[in-house]
Length: 264
Image 1 (cartoon, helix red, strand yellow):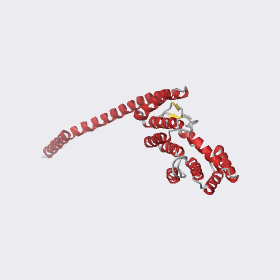
Image 2 (cartoon, rainbow, N blue to C red):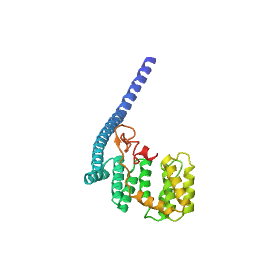
Image 3 (cartoon, one colour):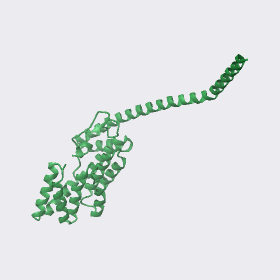
Image 4 (cartoon, one colour):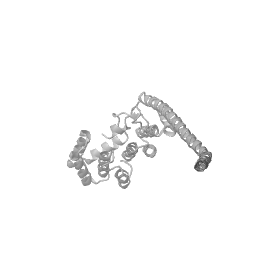
């Protein structure tokens, strides 16, 4: 009798297992397929992204070479294509270059439009703030002080990569707006601030000297001349962790349009 009961229980357990497996196996297969499809999708995306970045790097270097060789049309065409269709980092750098070219030609409004577009396209805070700083610097001689103050205030703060540059630009904006006393105070604060580069400290001291001697007009003329100077082109090098688009290729440390160079 005991053997019969055990046999019945075993049969019932077997039936339950078979029933469970018949219901569960489609879900198991679906989960396995989802994992495989997900892995393949990630692999395909990474492959496409790397190829796209590689093509963008070559196109950007070609445009830089054209610019260095004096081929303005070829350079602008190359930057324009990348500025519209390139990966985020190269799109940002290309828009910055177009802004610099327009600024050199004296077309301030067009330059600012490119800089603002670069800030919008930037894949990281460093490039975003660099583009925004370039726009504010280009507007020093034409925009109202409240507009410049709004733009530059957004770039200031302990964790902002271009805090000191923005503070220097705001001091210059105050000077151009006739706020000589406030400008002198800002320049003086810069000379005492930790982290200020020797060049920036020298500029601030020179500005203070000119203000004290009553030659503030000279500083204004220098600011106006500097506003139309294009930034040197950033150099893009290989790698796979510091890319301007977050995937591996970044601007070199030497150019002011590179994240590292601009922060100096």
